[in-house]
Length: 294
Image (cartoon, rainbow, N blue to C red; front, side):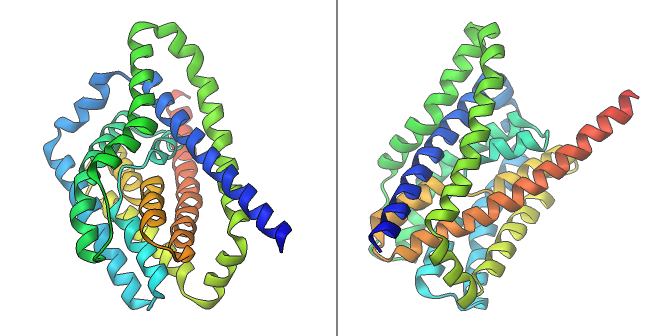
């Protein structure tokens, strides 16, 4: 029993470190490959921005509410799913967009925009949904600024001032990001495997997670307009939720560990499913480019 708890604690710590490294490396990498103008230009598309806000802050939470009632999820699992549905602007989306050979600039711009809106959206929505829950816009600004906006800004600054250094650093930082991503997936599964198996076998959590991820992607995709790259990018931006913020809210406000476990589980399902989709899209893009050159 003691050994099991020790291993669980080790995997949880490894997961936390890997998540931090992944977020820092992914946002730093995006900054190294882009300019401020490239990030801001896509946000001038007012229609696309409004549709992204509708998809992330209306359609996705609505989908979560439907699923938790349809599948009669136990309260801790329902709470975890709903919290996850309300947090947008995940740094993970940059890795997905990169794998799909998509529009990194659009993904970065929307990620930042959705983070900012999330900061002011959560303190309004969550206390209404769960009386007594506490979310501070100031704390969210601090945490997002430290782990997302700071490395992104640093990467952008290096790209502007030291372009050659940015070119040299970018492949290495990408490798660090990929390795951290693999470690966080494995460590999360190992840390929560018994609880994950329990909720899979005794509830409809897996089905709900798959429908939630696919439904969120489809919502974003079909609101993305006529440009295929925009549709794919908005699909990823909408379906990949901000796990770090969701976990922070869960840990600070709920003592039941299954709230946190649900967030981890749905996030793992989404990460694996979306990475498969991104890799498949990227493969077809690469194949199309070779055929065009040939």
